[in-house]
Length: 391
Ligand SMILES: NC(=O)c1ccc[n+]([C@@H]2O[C@H](COP(=O)([O-])OP(=O)(O)OC[C@H]3O[C@@H](n4cnc5c(N)ncnc54)[C@H](O)[C@@H]3O)[C@@H](O)[C@H]2O)c1
Image 1 (cartoon, rainbow, N blue to C red):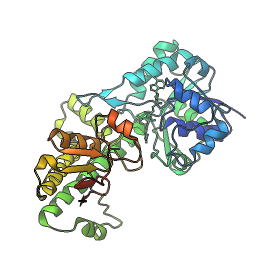
Image 2: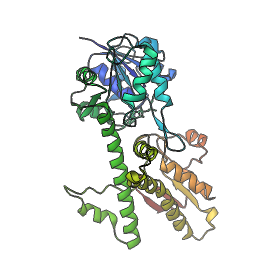
Image 3: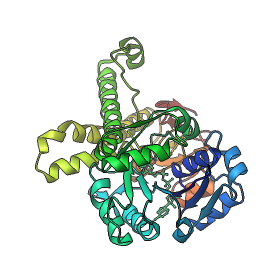
Image 4: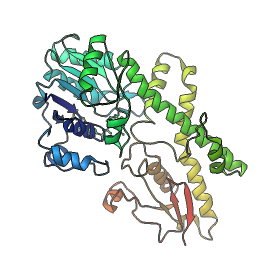
């Protein structure tokens, strides 16, 4: 049987999910405010070429089983509405729910009795059963029970979304028992490895926990790396033998960027601070600060390396070989590498940037000087953490 399923948000997470649902034989209405993206998808062109396996699925289903639109009215009549639009934190690191509120209110206007809505955007625990339910009820005039509501966090990894959706365990939890069961049945039609958990709050916390685990462990690796450097000990050799079944020291880095890991700890930090439980989130806050502070360490290293050259500091040409938040994934949200390049520029150093994911025009539009390592005295690879002398 063919079901009509709407996916709200056709970005890095929503588009691969839509394509996998379409590949399972269902009819997908993809709603996105970006009209040019919708047109591209309907022509069978993949806006995310870095996603392994997505080209073929978009070519096969774009404009057919997967119809993209910017008009929420086209989603009316769908049995299932999946919402996967972004959630950022504001300058004070408070979650900014405005994008999800806008999307959910539009969904509320097109659902009907019997519809199921599933939130996939990672949100602070309690958001689905609280504000999301409220927005849907207000806009639809329906009460929970007349429609169903659940949370199922996206657990993909950019570049490998298709295989993750097919293999990785995915969880789903309802705001009440009936919603949980209904959403589980619907998702089972296209997600093979699906687990039902007892509530939407559990499902929400699962994803937030994963982000916190990664952030704290990356900060531990960064701290151990700094200690090993200070002691003059090879961190990588020590790490190789330290890691075993019960110990997994992560890799050090310039910090943590992207939409996910640096954002999710704030959901818990801010909630505990609101409750004046400051002591409950000391570790999470410290990890955030340590990871963000890693660019100061790397800036100092680059300056120290520059001082070894027989040149005035301002004449040392430095190349940062990557500004994306992660190697191979194009994106600048909270990118520490982009922040590092700008920090060095603020120090008055002659910095150029190269990144195979960005054209010279894109780099220049960001206020950076485009240019590769050749012609520079020093280059820094922020993914391998290697400083090299070139001239
Ligand atoms: N990308 C990942 O690797 C990843 C991993 C795990 C979880 N997630 C979750 O997915 C969420 C979305 O991330 P993403 O990477 O897909 O973001 P993205 O920026 O790539 O895409 C979001 C899409 O939503 C669209 N959009 C924004 N407002 C809209 C609205 N009101 N109605 C319809 N469409 C709207 C945008 O035009 C864009 O195409 C994240 O906030 C996170 O919770 C993402």
